[in-house]
Image 1 (cartoon, one colour):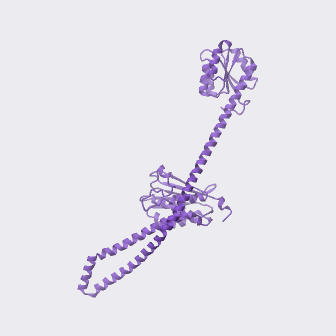
Image 2: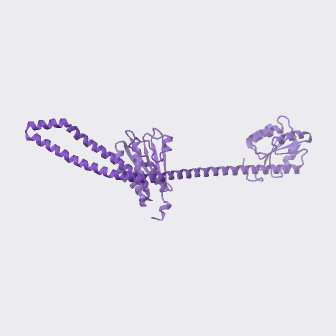
Length: 424
C-alpha cells in the first residue's frame, strides 16, 4: 500500500470485543478524517488486513480466541512497517510489556483517553507515511545505482576494449611494416620467376616439337629417354603448381598485412556523404567470389537517406560481415542483406544460415586475434576492426546467434553524428 501524506492515507483497523469501545473509538477517529474498519475479533481483522491492508491497527490486547499480541505477530509477518497500537487495562500491563518487546508500536491504557488515543494514532500514521516514503526513496535510489552501475560497467568495458585496440594498433603498424618489405620482393621475385618459367616452358615445347618434326628417330628416342630420366613431365607440372601455391600464400599474407595496416591507420580516410545501399553494392562486387559458391544471396535494401561517414571504412565493415557469413556456411545456405531506417539511424543486417555461435564465442568475437576459423582462413582482426569503425561513427553493432541456426549481425549508424555535423 502507498501513501502520499498522512492526511490522504489514514485507513485504520479497530479490533475490540466490546461494542461500546468499538463504536466510541470509531466515531472519534471518523471525526479526525480517518477511514475506519471495525471488527469484534482478531480473525476477521486479520483477513481484512490480508485482503485490503491498512495504515494502522488499533487492537485490544485481551480478546477471546486470537488475542492482540498474537494478532500483532501475524500482522508483522505480513508487513513489518504497519504500526500496531494495543489497548490494555491496568491489570494486563504485563501483557502490554510483552507486546512492546514484540515490537508493538505503542499502547494505550483503558479506559481510553481520546487525546492520548489521537496522539498515538497520529504518531503511528506519521511513522507509516515515513516508512512508505523511505521505501520509495530506497527503491528509486537502488534503481538509480543499478542503472549507473550498468553504465559504468559499460564504459569500463569500452575503455578496456579501446586500450586493447590501441595497443594492437601500435603492434599492427610495426608488424605490417616489418612484413611488408620482405613480402614485396618475395612477391615480385615469384611473379618474375613465373614469367621466366612460362618462357622456358614455351621453349621446351618448341624444342620437343622441332625434334619430333626432324624425323630423326635416334634424337627423338634420346630426347624421350632423357625426359624420362630427368622426370621433365612431372617437373613441368609441379613447378606450375608450386609457383601458384607460393603466389597464393603471398596473396594471403598481403591480405593479412593489409588488414594490419587498415587497423593501424583507420583515420586516414575522409568523411563524406554516402548511401549505405551503394556501399553494399560496391562491396558485393569485391566479395562475390567468396559468396557465390556457398550461398544464395538475398538483398532487401530499403529506401534510406545518405549519411555522413568514412565510406571506405564502412565498406570494410560490410566486407568483413559478408565474408564471415560466407565462411560460416559449410556447403550451401542463404545470406540475407537488409537495410532500413529507424527513428535515429540507418540500419543494416547481414544474416546467414550457417553454423551459428555459442554464447562463449559471442562474448569473444570482438576480441583482437580471436577466431574460430581454420588456420589460414582468418586472422581474428575483421570483427574487432569492424567494431571500432562502427563505434567511431557513433553507431552500434549487435549479434544474435544460436549454434546450428545461423547468425545475424546488425549495424546501426546515426543519421547525424556530432563529429561530422560541422564538416571536416
